[in-house]
Image (cartoon, rainbow over all chains, first blue to last red):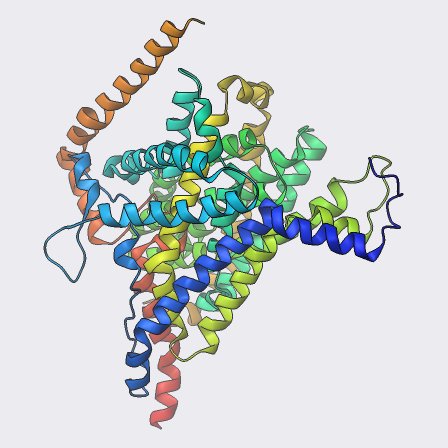
Length: 483
Length: 80
């Protein structure tokens, strides 16, 4: 216990505790690791394409840039009849399939070296980490292979679900071996993955459909999020505020990715994140099949149907599949509305983090927290997440060929690494979770009622706003953009 | 619970998953209706399990199309 009362710490104490935090805290290490990966990935694209960029004539024609790291970073792909096909990929430039094994090994080496070094510098054993990481990475690879089966993928059963299942099977049968513990770094993987995801949150994409897209995705969504959260607290009296928030966010924003970001921002328990994702994936499967059928049955306009799907179905891939079932115009509107909603993740994570440290995590006496205390409690990885989004958004609009540079950085390396980090995180959650720990959250079915009520509000409000924006106020502008 | 029972549960779970992924799902993927649905998704570059818009290949085409649509009025003005 400190002898000195809180609030009168000397400036040198504060400075030394900040330096100590920067050196040891998992949040800051996530920012360093994520930042390093983003910087190296962008520099690789920049240097390898610099000659091409200087020789280009000034033209608005799109050019295609590539990342030299692309061949060295991969994940298992999709397959239909043999799981071995997951380790071969066909590209547009080559006719014969290329093995993804060097890329998978590359991802293993990059993440392994980075996290072993971080562990060593934080005072843990790098050797123990490597021994455990090899096995955890193998389990993540298996999860990707399970998720890559095309029937499984067609029903939006994402890799995070299979990563969770693989971990759960081990922990709830033979038990998680203790030698795996040094590589079960759930929060570290998630936070680093979220910093990488920040680079994909490009604010300029907000304007893809103009005002109608913003109204459907950025006005309705926050209203539904806040209403669902308040409904859970005031009416359903859900005990865990973080569970309430994660379900509200994944249902109203964009499913799994929003659940991961919000759970990290409000420090939700891993069981709460698992439950929210389970609910979201279950309802996504139902909605991606039922909603296009309803839209067709009532003869709803294709563009209105697309906007409704994009604003309501949780998962991005499921939105595209459901939109395509209605037609090309519905696919375009649905996928774009969902993309605009995807970008909301950054704002939601930041707002939830602020709300949590200022309003939820009060001190034991219920006093308002001072600025210093808020800073101490604030999840610092959110700074990395928001900063990555801001920097890459500026590069996207500010540099000549910014879109091509950013796309090549994301497609060529950071997206793959982010996927691996989330997959490793969910294997880790599974390895740490006992089925019994999930039971208390299911009692009374309140999370299910919360999801159903929130989604009903979402369906009604989104339909109204989509009709107003896409078919009444901005009908000409939308018809001009969407052909 | 004994170690033996735990091992049996583990083996049962693994066998069930192996049966599902090595026998049931590949057969399901080859059924004409499912096969045509999977081919349809592949032709449209849609991965229904995509978590974020950057994981959707079809998004590149959509964004490029929208950039062109947004540039069209400007191009017309320049031409005049």
